[in-house]
Length: 271
Image 1 (cartoon, rainbow, N blue to C red):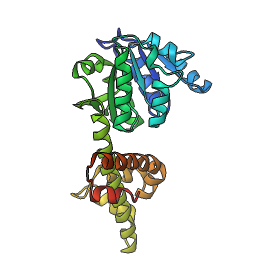
Image 2 (tube, rainbow, N blue to C red):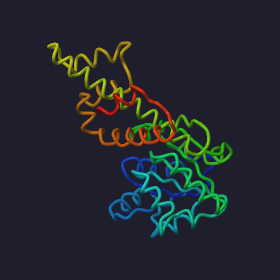
Image 3 (cartoon, helix red, strand yellow):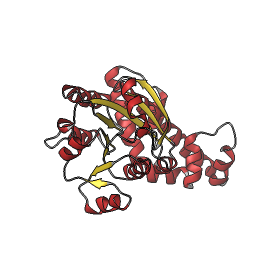
């Protein structure tokens, strides 16, 4: 992959897991100097194999980078990485950008943005849709909340692993779109599980039924993913805990904001 026009930006990445590691590979391959932080030695060893530079602390990462990308599991982890006793935000330089890919509460994004603003650091709430294969192909979808000019500045970095990159509003709005998406996806997965069960009760081969519907008007992303996974039940076994986590957050946020998700949430709870 040829270096991008924005490759003068130094990038830091926290969260070298299932999603973060392929992001790191794509960022480095695009020509960006890449620093990483992780607590597990084997993770850092893997990052070294493709040219990333491990740093000894979050503080060192913040001091060294123009863009710090965080891709961890939960709100609590975002708060710890960004604002904890050894948090990265207080070490970031004025004019640098904190990018959060973690699915969570909109108010967490706003809290981090407020703390970052005190230091002259911008925050982008970059909720995502897709998986490791999408990252490897450069096809991860991003819903971005934050200043449009800041997004334009770091787009060369994000574009190394994402397309499309959609600006959806202010900080926190990316998370709102993500949570609505995941509630709908959860409902579709739950419905696909019911169809699979009903196919069996009707004496049909559930796998054959899903493949047939996948070619027709009843298709959905959840159904297609179930086909590729082998069954809807298998998809729930693999990804159900992620779906349930996101649906629970969506329910909390919707309740706090007075939004009624109706039957979408009712069905999504069944995953």
